[in-house]
Length: 458
Image (cartoon, rainbow, N blue to C red; front, side):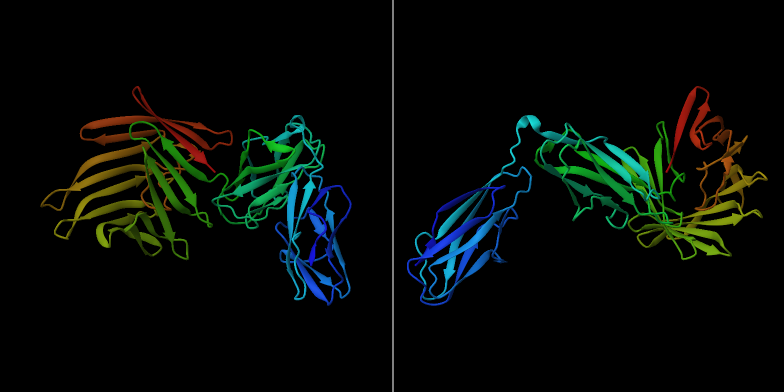
């Protein structure tokens, strides 16, 4: 009959090794194997017998009446509480019998005790920070402990991002494992630093946003107030490119431009009220615009000839609804458009034409809208838009957008006139600029009315 000599062993983390013994009621009549199962495996208790899964095996020699092995506490200097492990005689070889004392409970007491008065809270110093993509030497994300640590503790940071990949766009020090960083500050520490090192490239890959979140704490460290930190990696190839603009007033809207790796517009997001419309741009291998998708099954196609767009088509659910034909002047500016719409009988009818005039520096002067006269091959002028008094300043967002990639206004107009339905409305355009000379705001003034447009950059 084989069984443990004791029911319970109590240890402290800083104790030395302890012998665990078992006895047979008489000398063994043959060789055999004793298998002991552990209900909990922990690095805090080690043994001199190797584990096989959750068990250890101890050989029994013929004539032997006493068996033993050693357990060794691991003093980890962490406040992680007491540990209880139950050992059970799981099996013995044939010819041996398991006695009634077949369980042993080992209790390991944590020798690090933390009083409430010496605990420290951990918080991020700032809610957000940012760095440039080419700053590969790394940027320090700083956290503060409310008081220097008197005993060891640890905390875990959870990383998340919708657009950045670890080891692709950035790394951290300490390194993250499966999206988490385990931090164990040294005793006496009052500041903790996580270094974020971005990976630089030579293409437009977009800004990347990471979120750091203090998910778990243990020992002498508890959670503070600022538990999250948003970190922005700015794409240096994207910097200073026009991002968009917003216009106030009843007809106000906001537009945001996104770019592909080649620096071409990939998306335009237009927000009016609570509605956002997304236009997605598609290009051929030579970087020429092929298609703009607005909604599912709604596209605008572009037909090229002699390196110019000569026609565009609006397709809805596979049906051609509208097409526009384009003419050009000798400078390569769009000089006219003819706009055709599908009629209920399936035929296409010319709805209107637009003629564009330019100054000698290729800035748009007039756009004149003509309507066909029913039954005649003539047109009547419906309305005119006139742009004059241009300033010597770069225009990132022209007021008139005829075709992608063809800029109608390289400079900023000083006045804008609308002539339509017997009215003649003159807008005086005033501008504000950033310190580096880029456009910041535009004010369109008509009598006592003012419409403000704000401009944004990456």
